[in-house]
Length: 179
Image (cartoon, rainbow, N blue to C red; front, side):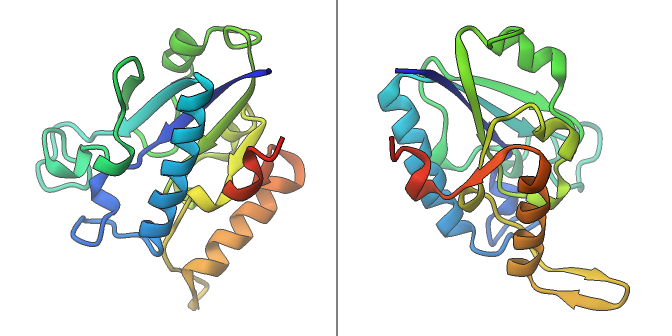
């Protein structure tokens, strides 16, 4: 069986309905992410959780030391799973990722896959390092572009379509473990 690694990014309370950045369809995203985590744990895959923290700004989203920075309980890390903090929304710190995954074949993990709730804030450049993105374990919120309101489902679909064009494979939770 091919080894895999799961990178879980920013599944934090700040995105819940009572947080500072509530996301559309977060409950379904969490349910899907929980399925992915369970499968990864069953396979004994390497799992690394990232969480965003903003130090020095008590009122900011993800203010360090607040409930908003805590990982959502349903998808919280278990013993043996790394938790890494990051300060910038678009960046997965390369050196910190490699510290846990290694270089080259990622400690034998040939398939690196990822889930993240806030898809349009993540940097596509960091996503090209991943072979698979679990599209329905990601969520977003509505945006405005040139005065046009763009509903969350269209923002999500557009980002996933653009990502899948030339970068990693984007799959739904239902087919991720179909092998």
